[in-house]
Length: 296
Image (cartoon, rainbow, N blue to C red; front, side, top):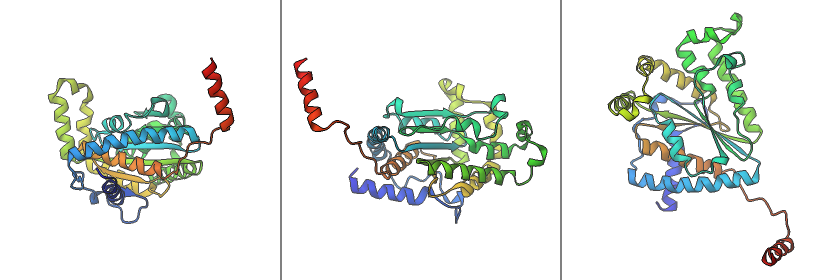
C-alpha cells in the first residue's frame, strides 16, 4: 500500500472509530461488519508493515525511557482480543511488552479497591503494557450481574444507585492522572455482532481443537446482550477523553479488526515524537573504542 494511501486510510479509521468525548456517541453508530471497503489481501500486507514499524517504535520508546504505553482491550466473548494481541504485537521484542489477562477477582483482590489488581500491572516507562480485560469489568459484568457486587466487601452505605457512575468517575480520574505522568492510553472495544459471535461459538463446538475455548456460561451471557451493550456505551461515554481515547473497532472480520488496531497504534506512538537518545560518548571516544577492539 502506497504511503499516501495508507495515511488516508489511517485518517479515515481514526475519524470513524475514535471516541474522545461523550458528545454524540452511540454504539449503534458503528457497524461491526464495516471494512471501509478494504480487501483482505491489502489489509494483511498493511498489517505486516505496521508490525515491523511497531517493533522499531518500541525500541525507540525503550531507549528514550520517557513515555510508557497502556493498551486496554475490552469485548464480548469470541470478539478476537487474544488473536488481535497476538497478530498485532507479534513483532515486538518480548522484553518491551507485557500482557496481563484479568479474570474473576481472587479473594485477595476482593479485599482491596477495584483498581488495585490492575494498578500493580501498569507498565514502566519505555514499555508497552497490554490489559486483556481490565478495571472496566467492574462497570460491565458486575453491572450486568448485580449479585457479584454483594461479594465485594463494600460497606452497605456505599452501594447506591450511583455506584456505576461513581466507578466510572474514578476510572476517568485514574486515567487522567496516569496520562499526566507520561503514559499514552489507548482503549479498544472490539465490537462484534451477536450473529457473528454465535457463528464463532459454533465453530468452537465443531472443531475439537477449539473445544477448550468454550464454556456453557458463554451461551448464558448472550441472554444479557442488550444489557452489556448498554453498559459498554455508558462506560465509553463516561471515560472517553483526548488523553484516553476509546476506539470502537468493527470485529466481525478479524483481518480488519487487527489492521484498525495496528494503524491506530502506529499513528499514536509516532505522535509521541520519539527520538534516539544522544550518545554518551563523543566521536573521539567511539574512535578510541574502535581502535582498542581492532587491536584486541
